[in-house]
Length: 118
Image 1 (cartoon, rainbow, N blue to C red):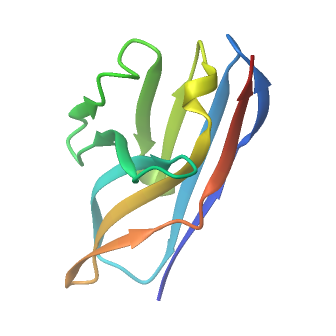
Image 2: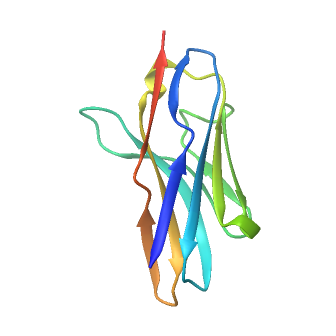
Image 3: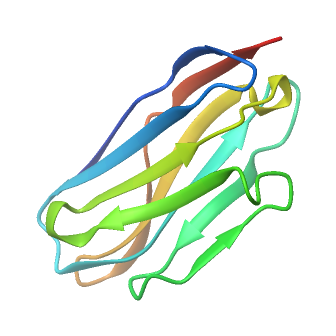
């Protein structure tokens, strides 16, 4: 079984920073892409950022220049550094990991709440 554990959410004032972590554990051969999505109340879940096993990154236009996705392959962990946070960044943030078990499957974290006050 594969487990994803997220941490790092919380309440922060506009302009502040938070760092999210997503650690994968269990029995698997490897991890392909890792990424973050978010869902605000009443809105659809949207992609925030992804990073491939080779380190290539992709960001939503709304977070470019403010958020940085990274990974530590030795720890099977992905990170999302969020700077210059805005109230519109308020959402539940979910990590998504593509894991080879050897079947290739998507796994989702339990979600962590990020609230940015104005």
